[in-house]
Image 1 (cartoon, rainbow, N blue to C red):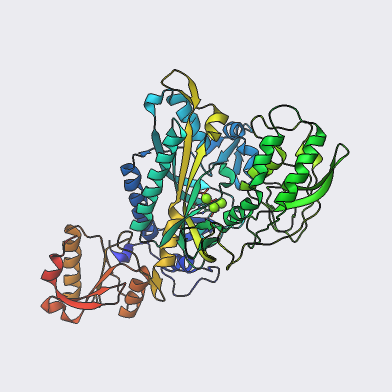
Image 2 (cartoon, protein in one colour):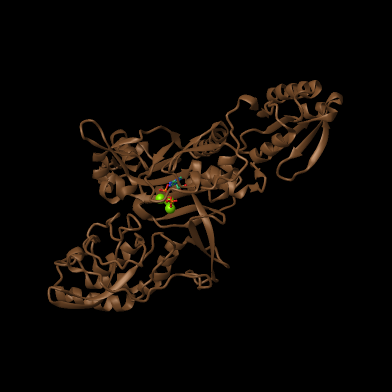
Length: 562
Ligand code: ATP
Ligand code: MG
Ligand code: MG
Ligand code: MG
C-alpha cells in the first residue's frame, strides 16, 4: 500500500475529548473517526486490524465447530415480547418504527432471532449439538458511551450460540468456547484473566468474563492473592453474602412444601430466615450496578413481619432522574423509595436469594397471598458495606485484591430460558419433546482492538503484536527526491509484497522527521529505512517493540521468510 494515497490522517496533538490511551492513539494514528457520540467509522488502517482480529476469532470458532452465519440487525418487537426482553432490556435497546408504526429493535444481541430460527429448523436430538455464530454490528444505547470504541453505541461483536440436548452437553459446549476464547485472546497478544461474572439480563447461570487487565477498565476484578478465585466485584459481593444465607434455602424447603401456606406460616418463616440473612451489602462503584439487600418491618395482611429481606433490580436511567425501573424481575417490581445517594441497584444473583426467602418463582414453592410487589415496601437501609481489598477471599483462601479490567468476552450458560420462552424444543430418542439447552458467547471485536492498544503502546505510539498488525513492514525512503533511495524502496516494496509480506510504503514527499513520527505512531512491527547507503543496497531495519536497529543488505531482506 502506498501511503501517499492512503487514508490514514494522523494527528500530532492529543485530542482533548479522549481520556484513555487507546482512544487517543486510535484517533491520532487515523484508525477511527467519530460520527456521533459512541458511533465511529473505522478508516482503512483500523479496518485492517479489525479484520485481523475477526480472522483470528473466525479461525478459532471454526476450529471449535462453530458455523458462521449472518442475522439481521432489525428485529421485530414481537420476538422480544415473546422472550420478555422488550420490557426488561430497558432504554439500552434501540427501538425504531417503520412507516406502518410497527416496532422493531436494533439488535443488541441475538438470542431471540437465533432461537426462533433453530426452533423451526431443528426438531430432533439427531441434529444436536450445534454451535452457530456471526460477526456483526450491534446497537446498544449506552447510558455513557465513552473511551472511543471501548464503549460504543454501535460496535462489532462476535456472538455465538450453542444448542444441546441436555445440561451435560451444555457443559461441554461451554468448555469448548471457554478454551477457544483463551486461544483467541492469547493470539491477540492480550494479558487477560477469565473471571466469574454476573449473569445479568441474560438470565443465565454459569458465566465467565474474559477481562483484559489494564488501568482503565470499567470493571473491577476481585481476586484472591493465594487461590484461583477471581470474580467481577459485583459477583464477589454475592459470593460474600451467600455463606450468611446458606440456611435459608434449606429452611424454605421445610417451611414451604408444595401446597398452600397460611400467612402466619409465611410470617414465621420470613422472620427466622430474615434474622439469619441479615447482612446487607452494597457495592458502590461509581455509577455501576450494585447489589443491595435491605430490611424492614412490614405487615402483610395484618401479620407483622420483622426484618424481612428484599432486593430489587433497578438502574437509574439518568443522573437526574433518580427512580426508574430498567430491569424488572417478574414479581418483584413495586414501589421502592430509593434514597438519592444510593446510585444503582441491581443484581440478578440476588434474585435466587430473595426467591429462597419468600418462595416466589420456585416450582411448587409459592406462598399463597404473598405478593412482594403489592405487600413489600422497602423503606429502610442498614449495614451498608462493600467488599474491600484486604477482606478474606470468599473461598476462604487468602486475601482479596482488586484490579481494573476491560471485558472483551463473555460466556454464558443460558439453559432453557430462551428455548422455553420461544418454544424451541426437540424430540429425544424416546420421541419426547424437550426444550433445547442453550449457551451464548460474545466477544467485543472492536473493543478488543482498543484493548490491544491499551496493553501495547509507548509514548510514541502503538506497538502492534504481529498477529494483528495492519501491515508487517513499513518501508520508508528518507528522501524520495534521491533517485537511489526512491528506486530501492520501490523495489523492496514490490519484492517483499511478492514474498507474502504486507507492506506499507511511505512514498510521501515529507520531511524524514514527519515520516518517522508517523511510523512510530502507526506501530508496524518492522520498519525499513532506505537512506544514505541505498546505492550500496544497504538499509536499516528497526524493530518497533524493542527499538533494536540493524543494518542489512537488500539480499538478506528478500530472503526473509514469513
Ligand atoms: P459491559 O459490561 O462492558 O457493558 P456487557 O456485559 O453488557 O458489556 P455482553 O452483553 O456480555 O456485554 O456482550 C458481549 C461482549 O460485547 C462484551 O464482552 C464486550 O466485549 C462487548 N461489548 C458490550 N457492550 C459493548 C459496547 N458498548 N461497546 C463495545 N463493545 C461492547
Ligand atoms: Mg453492557
Ligand atoms: Mg458486563
Ligand atoms: Mg457481559
